[in-house]
Length: 87
Image (tube, rainbow, N blue to C red; front, side, top):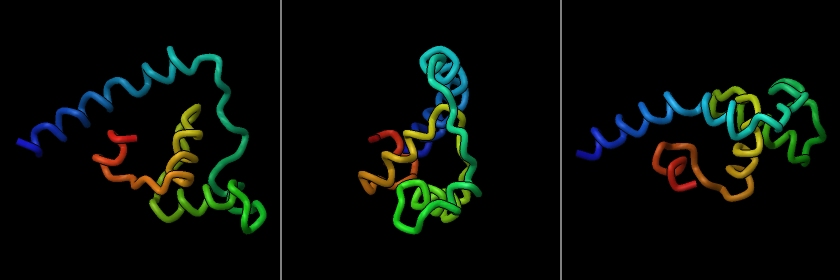
């Protein structure tokens, strides 16, 4: 049953995330940095840590959702599906 629930939630997320960004983040601008540029920030900066986070997990930045990834760093919340839903 858990596997079916996870599949359903992934399906819903996949179908709604672009709508969410379009309608609820329309006034928000995407960051002007990419993952490679973040790795060039000072060693102990938040930008550098975020770049390392993306590299470690093989992620790319989703426009207008960059703050979400900063929350992962600040809270130590994981990136597995259950942690994403909890966050």
